[in-house]
Length: 211
Image 1 (tube, rainbow, N blue to C red):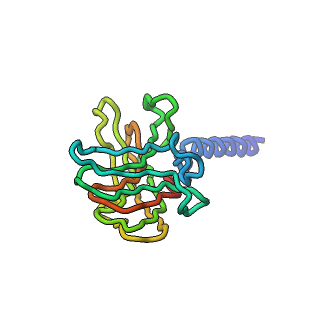
Image 2 (cartoon, one colour; image 1 turned 180 degrees about the horizontal axis):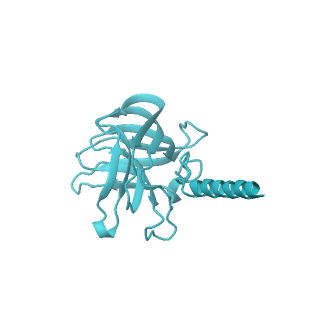
Image 3 (cartoon, rainbow, N blue to C red; image 1 turned 90 degrees about the vertical axis):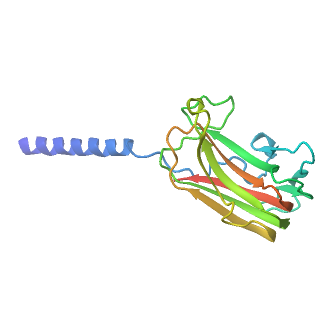
């Protein structure tokens, strides 16, 4: 009987230990955090389209369309064109925002639970037509909260590393950030038409994985 009691005691301890190990495990990875990254639904409630640093004298002019002219899957993409880049500061961006669970996020904001130290990988498929200048850039970044004056927590992009220019059918581009910082308040994925860039680009199949 003593031997049986000892065996049962050891078995229970082993089960409890394994249960604790499971509870301590990191949150599961996220295959794709981006909402409507294939743009098959109308993008304007999920994505922000904006022109930043607009010159007051002679601003660059951008045309942004929800398009069926070209797509990598199934039938829609975002088409952005610029016929003339008059200055080196104005740029168009397409951006999706996320907030961490601990932040005081705005009503209706997308909440994303990312563990500190997680690896982030953003991917996007882009078709270019006579894109000249600095080209198209994909980027992922984040900011701290009010206690740090919303300073940048991290940022990485393809700018200066992977040229997205010329004329090409849809190609997949990706960037990785290896360690998600603690105390991040918000983060974003974006694609932007960098200053001095002209031509036409189609964006499709944007994703963000967390591992």
